[in-house]
Amino acid sequence: MLKLYYLSIFIILHCANGGKVSNPKEDIIHFPGKASVDKFDVSAAIKTDCIAGFCSNVENYPKQDVEKLVENNPSVKAFFENDFTPEISQRGQFDSADLEETLCEANVRWSAPEAANNTDNVTRLIVQRDVKQFVYIEQCNKSASCKFKSSFPNNYEVYCKQKYSLKRLAIISDNNTIYWDTFDVPCCCVCALKRI
Image (cartoon, rainbow, N blue to C red; front, side, top):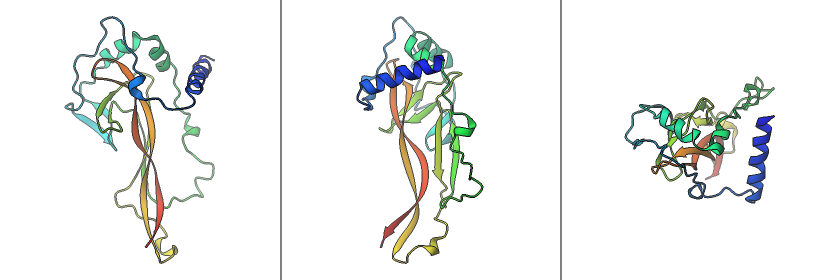
């Protein structure tokens, strides 16, 4: 019931903004008091378990400092107390999956990144707690080429193409604030045609 309440508030606020995605620089949440993240150079930190620039493990991720920042802000805390992770049955699975075949092979993965490059290609520290911010990544295999190439018309070039979607994630900025930033996430690998 509480999840529904917070989802309703989110929808009301989103509609009040005309359904537009606002500028992340304007979505800054300032924290009162002394809670802050010690200067953590995320760009210099050792990052592992990375796919498409989304890294699930950042060496010395400042978990306690992140926790303090979230705890000192009720609206951010409320967001992270509600787990909106989709059930396995809702994660892009299809009843007819056994009958379907994709034209381009891709690597598919759910990630709870601790660091990633935003749309401006700046590495950002992503807020992660027990309730995670997940990202669905579907990335074309490097050697992927469209299946059944010979079935397409001769006057077309056929190739696999990576598509992206925008995802907003709560991040910690350089001045110890949490705000929403936007990231390009590889979301699907499609077979594309181009007339030659």
